[in-house]
Image (tube, rainbow, N blue to C red; front, side, top):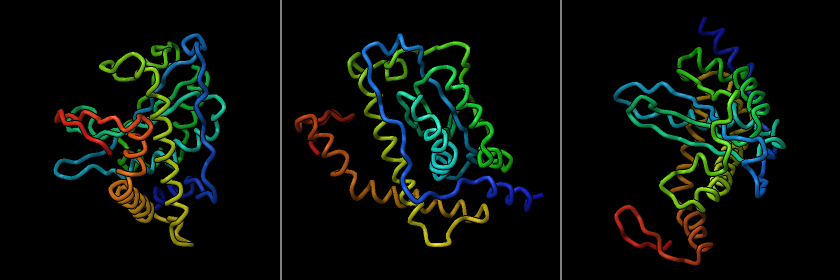
Length: 241
């Protein structure tokens, strides 16, 4: 039974591409709330046994092999999108979310494709993904651009932030794709052990990149866009990058 599960898992895995995927880019309008679009969520909950660290590599695996295909398929119908990652010892636990802004009809098609994804279904059977939840497309609960932003932020930031985090999510997904492409020739995973090892390696590589280059490539240049004005951190200290 286990052998059949492993075989079917890799039969359904997407082929590693030769070029980075062409993902949706933000299209801004002045009347987004009247467009008939709304925010939709797909929430993947991962197994997280007591006494161990979260399996962070699972977020990358889901983003690359489950979400990236639908982003490419529906790129002309998605106005905004982003990822959210979290792992807290509460009811939600280790959860990876795909959040996107589209029509209910597009959301329904995306949900259908995700439910049918072979990799996801085999990860569920293997107990790696314990549940997947989807919003009800019969009602647009969050029609406005700012509806899924932090309500503690200023109104203008709530409206602008989704464009920023979409670019950040696209950069992260592209880094995953590039690292997968650079895996050794003939390194296409043929077992669950190989698949896990690949995405653990990719996760470690991106963690290392963030630690070594993030302060300049990301934080410094973001600070530069805002004129090097010092940033107030949680400790109430003003810091420049």
